Image (cartoon, rainbow, N blue to C red; front, side, top):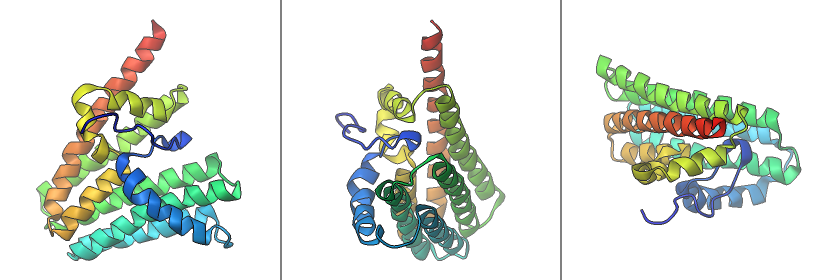
Length: 224
């Protein structure tokens, strides 16, 4: 990839920046949905619940070895995950409470997907080990981002620093949640849940290492 993978991205504050997959694939669809539903009485938090339930459906489908249904539900959940924030901003109800709920639901759904992939891949010990490695990478990287935010490092600043850190640039499109879910969607449609599981395990672990390294560099630079 050439150029800045985050150039022109939407800065979503606490959540950080939209990656290119969200910006060019998910966000145009979610905005169409938002334009049709923002006047309805369904709240942003309720949309978070709808996105969460849709993603859990995908995780369950993977677990019972219906990978194509799982893939479609996971991608639908990924798209719907953008609707809650858009509805909140349109209605003027955006705030830290909703952001916290969204964060908790997203991470819970992420772990559920990994569990579904492990079960659908055969449920061997090595599959569950891969799911554990992947879950650690996804959840701990999120914790690291929140910790940096608590030290007044904006999420967008962290992501920009990661994008500028050499070879990490190539992983940025798949490093964000929308990228991970798209990879799972594609490999699910190809009926390769084990490949999806191991790919996310590797990618999330690399992302975690880079996030901690970049975050420490930012904080140590402030201390100088």
